[in-house]
Length: 367
Image (cartoon, rainbow, N blue to C red; front, side, top):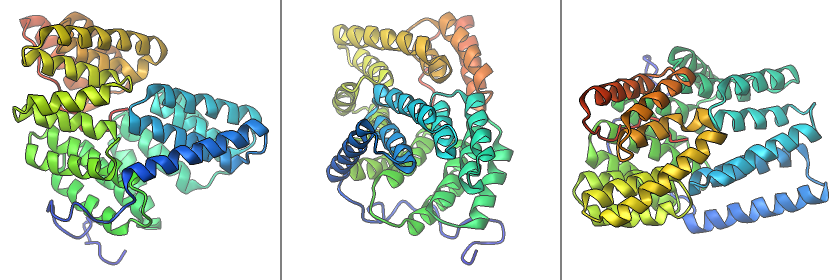
């Protein structure tokens, strides 16, 4: 633990310099490599020659591609692959770990914990289990339990994963100095040249600064993520939020038009709002209708994962606060987090006053 102060914080400050380091593979090349690897693993699976470790990798990489590109169909494909993996190898703990991650992505947290218990019973190592349990605890607002597991991971091995998890924990709670400190420590510990883990972490810290209203720092972190991975839809989506907040509507609209092509309803909802504010009412109505349709479809399939997203849509550009309140209350049942309570409070306030609420800042990764 050399180099870490007694209070458990990583050394360093909260500077925003050095955003280009460490050097990582160009985003287009990394995405090409990701596609090629998924294609190769899929081919092996179709021939029946894929190992258990290969199945786990296929599920993980498919989910990663879905997250990066904002492609919900890819995330659903990852969940389907995880189910197939369990069917093929029910005694392999990696199959239950894969299904746990898929369940957590769609916010089915009790199911995720049950799968982690199954993986533990089959002998999966504690480090992998603790990392996943910590993520679930954090997602449902059990922050103390998550922090304890993060600290145990750091004590075992202060690598990028452990340091980045602590950065994400502090970012979600809006603890900016600590989050930045752990982010810088994670960067120093990063090994390899993949841009994916760094871009994800930088985006989370960018969202934190956006929620705090610090547009300069938000842009710095989000642009760093986007430079590493230009195709990264969450980074582009939040950069559009920064553009819009700075009065750069044209830049925001351009980003969101490109990002919305993958079918992400959050991009469509933001695009409708910015277009409406810019006076492009006809196109704004188109994207509002598109977002409403997509949210309805996703709520039917994944209510736990999209109740909060849909609630914010109806609370803002959707213009139906009562519907927003119903969804916000439903989301609160799934995830009793501070942000979930804030969403309910905003919806109740709007129902009473009839005023349109601004979009809520988010301090967690958009899942």
